[in-house]
Length: 295
Image 1 (tube, rainbow, N blue to C red):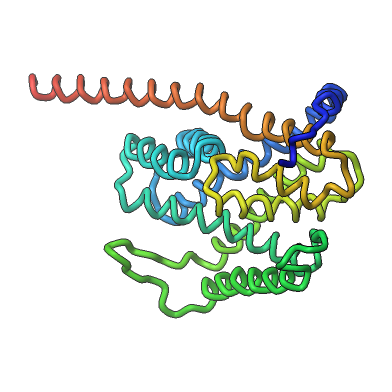
Image 2: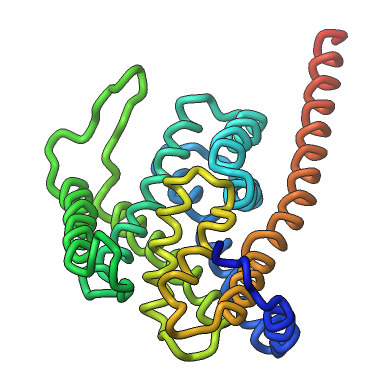
């Protein structure tokens, strides 16, 4: 309904008007974001104590993140992570703990960033929305309480281990939890910077970042891979008074191209390389075992 009367000529004009320097800056933020997100698994290595080197962990985490963004968490976050880590010799409980730790890192950062923005009144909601600005502030305060509660638990809790359905849950140290907060919040801020780079200076970075926060949780609730259509609908609804639809759509198409599709293409190639390396390692292991039996 929002795009029914869209002037696609305006969108095309906005897309072709991007200067190379703007696109390079946006790509720079994308690279920083993916490096930072992939480093969540390095925190997971420290948390679980496994000894896989960073040269194996970072490419694996990058592939999982790119597939997660485009094809849902079940494909990238769960299935691929279990497949790739198990091929490197990690057992299921360790992989589960890495996965859970990464999820906590990501959503801890979300709670902190979104909580601060919503509490400060960003974004300004259009008249007629049931939740209203006051309701959004209450949600923001609740988010901050939840995030701070986790950090305080990591600092002061006396009981630090639980066993739930056969899975051991251990609170990380205070320093590790602080790194989770910084890295998680930093990644969300970098995502907002990509969109901010592709849009003219009107709404301001806090408003754009807060709108991204709303669209991200809306995408999770609707279970649509990559939030396709959800991201665009939220941005157009909340920012239609400050930007034309064509300008917004051009920026969001550019955002999807540089943050979703381009990394996915690189991740596909990386995944094939990882599979080939794993196959070679299995072949060498099989040859060694055969030679050992012969000896």
